[in-house]
Amino acid sequence: MPSLNPYLSFQREARSAMQFYQGVFGGELDISTFGEYEGMVQDASEADLVMHAQLTTPDGFVLMASDTPAGVEYRKPAGIAVSVSGDEEQKLERFWSALADGGTVTLPFDVPPWGGRFGMLTDRFGIDWMIAYTPPRE
Image (cartoon, rainbow, N blue to C red; front, side, top):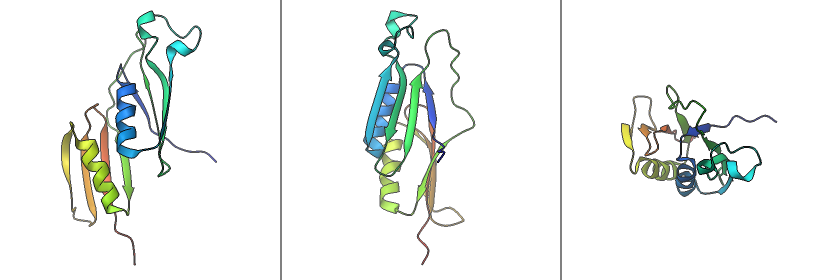
């Protein structure tokens, strides 16, 4: 069965960002570096950069990331956000608070006109997030 997963690009912060997200969401984090694979390093100073990282969380989220080595154009994320939604308000509130730590809140996690709770922020690594709580239907 196919899956759709966010894949984040960083310049030199992928390891720190993914360790941060592991602290936010929990789960298992696997990291491979460019230096682990023969012929992947053009500059010895980039051997420890993240070629691929994957966080698999207890909630079933899969978040991936990598660093962008020199010689490859890096573009900051624009026009997209990682969205986390569900009906577990306390858990979503914890995610919100952790992601907001050191970041910038764009729209507070509050009650929007359509109900539930919703907020938007940019985390300390420059990644945009949307958190949405929808109460369970009775």
